[in-house]
Image 1 (cartoon, rainbow over the protein chains, first blue to last red):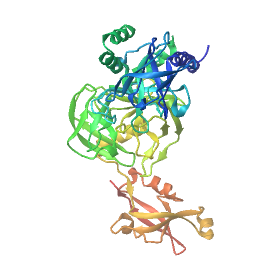
Image 2 (image 1 turned 60 degrees about the horizontal axis):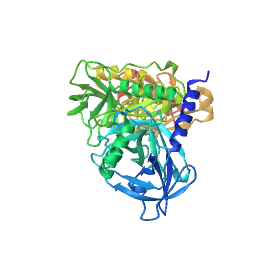
Image 3 (image 1 turned 180 degrees about the horizontal axis):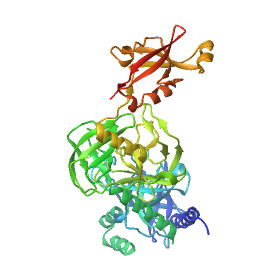
Length: 206
Length: 298
């Protein structure tokens, strides 16, 4: 019988393996960020600050590099939707970011300092708009005790079941990693892309 | 999938929820509010000394969302603890953890409530050690260091175990850059003292000292190699009234050897305040015995 730490490690393997499938790299001409496949037909979400002026491309887990175009971007909430010409892409299950509680185990994956697919795990510190140290008055965040780095931006933050609860965005201070909650991304997609994307998002969230 | 991880995650969230039921917000300074712990149902709140700038007009944010007035009962800068009395009753006091079984590597959570909701960081026990004395001379029953992140406003909040019970009060001010916890045994002692006296009596001589090596003849005669040299003697201080002089070397106090500053600090404990005790000094190569009445640094 493996001990509890070995069992946790085993479950982490499954979570990481799953979340890797929908993790992409985003090249913007002068740097790289991460992105998360939202829809099998080539819809990818990331941070607005990952977008460069030109030459956007997406590198999939299977190694394919595809040109990408910006469908919509919201600088206020730092979220963006990209499209690549592909179908049948592996997507990620949506979690309920509104029900996230302090203490819950979360894992962030991305490409910190260019290390592709690197994972870091910790707990939710707090959620909501009342986080004194977070930027953007009244903006909703998931605060974690994760060390997010350049290259994590736009990558998925998942719960203990590997479900997407947020998009890794920035650090606030040396020890607080902030993510945009998944429900903010759903709202953004509904606003920007209309009810079809919203309905798809709601169906998957259910 | 990931059933163990899911259970693990739920257990952590449960521990935070349990700890959150006794973690309060303490508004007692101009900057960001800090945190505190409900120590008794009738409104005794423990927090960190360095986050309490005001003695009155303190507000405590309770876990149920209410804000109540509080006043300072007393503080101890040496252990960075303060006790408040909140204007509330029927509160849920923190269940105390038994730290006998605590080992390096155990998972622990630091909690804070700088805002409306409880916040948490996870880490492990990094180091456990014997009793130690802070820079200010405070006696801490056990060295307890973790790698939990201390966010702004977390000072005064609890370190909690996996069941959400309090292991101690976090302070980011005792040693800079290190997450240290004042253990429950020390907190309990300090709360009793502060409720009884309003402050922690601590012995005071009114001198500045430096450890020095004794001449070998003296060292052989009195059986110790070092003592502490008086670099200054405050006017009107207990030391001056006892006849201690600049340049004297203290080698014993209350018949206990004084080999270094730690020895002296340990002997200047609160229970000696007000008592007249023998002090042995070396002056001009001669051993002299004087009597000093230990003052209270307050």
